[in-house]
Length: 321
Image (cartoon, rainbow, N blue to C red; front, side):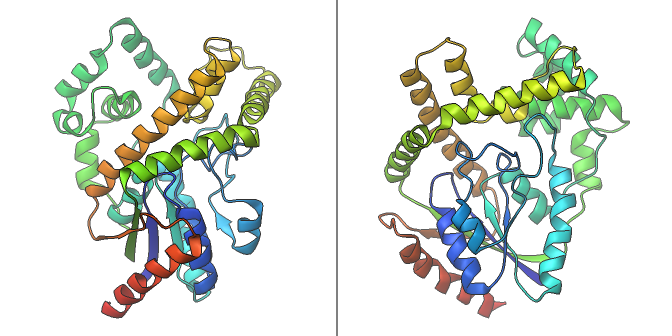
């Protein structure tokens, strides 16, 4: 089977610098597995590779859609497979880099084709939830207890999607996942980057401070203005649904600050707290993934030194296959 390297790990661990060096060494290209880097104009807050890094190595699945457009895991896989095939046809091994567990799970364990998004239905479900918090989760437990058991009660997005599948088809989402899942025909070599929790949290705080210095506030202003301008150009007068792009950590907090609801220091505090919590959730998610070969780079802050730690691991794994 054709090989695909996956370099995964929590946000802020240092994957970008390492992956750039790895791609240069293997003379290949990088495929992003980050659900926020798909959005154009959102560069600072999503920690996209720098222009220099993107000039040195070609990156795919970055700047794919506008911030007010919708995207799905299914669409991600649909777009990624031709890229992987092209790289294999050119005799290179693709490197997938990111921390979005759902994208990586869909790649390595497969994905099913469910009904497309029904925004009218979703808005109705959101209205029900706003009237009585927890009602959607209780409803899902009745319709699809298996799916409910895999979703936390406060994960509104996944609850609504599971209900949407149940209500728009003759099957439950758990049944579809079991019976209709398609796996990708590749040999995935999964390398996990990890750091000590205290060090990672300190690095996250420093990165958030740097994002503010680099102009995150102006970036959020630009993106929100662009979204509003595009809405007006479409003549969109309907009730606005929450945009996934504006729910990204860093953006939603700055939007709250720009509305005058909280001071800047509180917005920054919330971004740091939210990013740490996200990193913790990533650790939890990746523990469920099989065959991840973890490399601890605690104390290493130079990308080349970290790369020299990881490269022998990849070579051993390739030799063993």
